[in-house]
Length: 345
Ligand code: CP3
Image 1 (cartoon, rainbow, N blue to C red):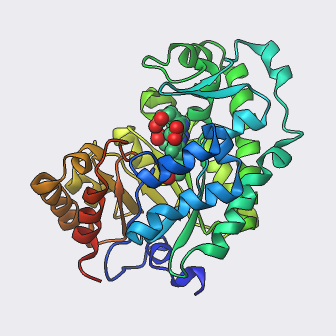
Image 2: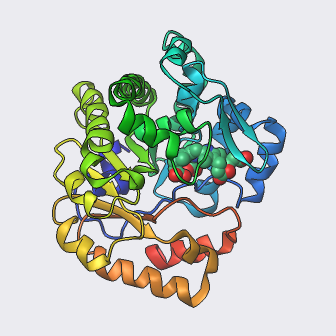
């Protein structure tokens, strides 16, 4: 089957499909007992990301269970700072930790010289997946957007207030621009390699775009994402690009005007009727079930899914969550969700 014939790719091309394609952000992960088994075997989380055989296995697990229409490469957005030479580790139960960048002097320690050598195992995972996936399942490659990756590089991990990041962006914009430019270049090269290895669509995660002041959204989120998409499309014009500027509210309107973004992945913050008339009229949309609705399940899940389908299934649409699956989600709730979206086909 050619990529263009897969239902997920058809939807990304703006075609009306017989039912909405479905995949879920973080569909591979700790809510699945079989993931936890492999994770134990792999050692650390980063070891898993850089082990093509095991990373292929965990990518395939949710496809075997649920026959999703798309599979997303198993890796992490933070492999980029790691490949640039920044120290990265995942403290058990605490999320990612990095040796934070403090100022100009720390740029000296970042180098793209070994980028593809370090990321080689990720490209191998992509090649393995194209060999092993069912013929109707599309393969999504991904990367973090520069703003979100920079947030981890400067904060040294997760944060609630994004103070250090914003102090750079507002107080030292030229230096911050230098970091964003570096991330634009290496992220575009990284995604190009994923496409060459077999990725059929790309998603760019700007998970923390929602903390950017509206007046700066173009500079620090939309422009870098567009520069990456342009560079990838210069070599592969037909590769569909999904942008996920999570939490930007009305800012989604500016992304809907982009000539290089094909699909907008939406969080759960915007009214469905507004999405339909203001965003779906211009772009394919993907989303936007609250991950807690999937956690809760039952009647609440049925009602929430029904409302999304009623509003968005008339136009080009991909069913997904508004953010990643929560690790405490019962896998049976995902079975119910797939039935609600796909019926009995
Ligand atoms: O199934 C998939 O979606 C593919 C794999 C994937 C992971 N991370 C695996 C992962 C993808 C697409 C990501 C993207 C990612 N990583 C984002 C953007 C999306 C989002 O969630 O906003 C971000 C911000 C990261 C950074 C990151 N990685 C954090 C903050 C954490 C800790 C949070 C947590 O859930 O523990 C990770 C770790 C991580 N990435 C896990 C997985 C399955 C859990 C680690 C483990 O198994 O121990």
